[in-house]
Length: 290
Ligand code: SAM
Image (cartoon, rainbow, N blue to C red; front, side):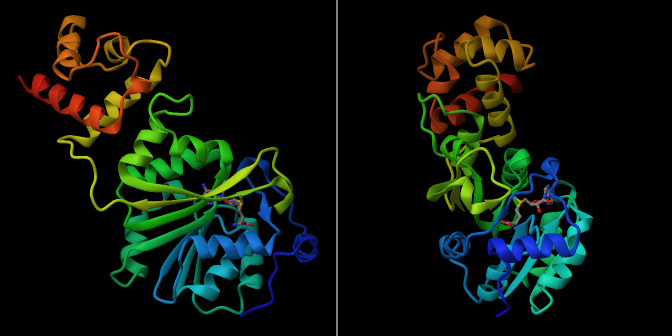
């Protein structure tokens, strides 16, 4: 156990000591509330058996709590100016490895295979908000060897991840997240818990990878259709698939597929459930192979 750095005074001291300045383009809003940090670790259900990956450790505020609770932690930080600071703030821990890399360029499964001793990782992070969706999508679509992700995101993004068909927040992110994961919003965090304060409320959400997914023959084809469905929200699903799908099918062919699924050709994509997207994709798959 090392002295915690996540108080407003300590955080300020560290920033001044190293002449560090916050970079908006890296989404740098550091947590300065110990209760929030403790609750992230609790929500992630981290135990002394766990290998944890953290994206964006910043000056190490959450990392310290993770190191206290986990077997080992690997933290991936893009900003090279933070690496010497982390060397200082995490110097008292022997179960941490810091990697100076862009998480979107890293071979995460390679890292988990190397560091995880045969176990899947748990992910815990206060994510940089400018790339929340690309990070989550990358981890899901590449089938990262992760059992759960407990992440701080903009509240509005957490709402989208949980949204149900037919609601205004329902979109490609909702379908992808719910196809792969069970979702649970753990708690809401106000701007006052960060330095500097973001302009929006935040939420901690836990995504637990499902053992049983909706069955679909070709995941990539289903996600291609989902992108068409939400690419032109005001258009019908028929027009979305016709305009954006690149399937080389006539409107009549597409209408036939929709009808075979029991769907009205005037339906909009936002009203379809994951099972309906999967069924649609399987019927498209049959037609495309003819
Ligand atoms: N974990 C710290 C905390 O809670 O105080 C900092 C969180 S801050 C919201 C996001 C962190 O992600 C910053 O340290 C930022 O430099 C880092 N970051 C931004 N883009 C990144 C990327 N592509 N790969 C890895 N880290 C990134």
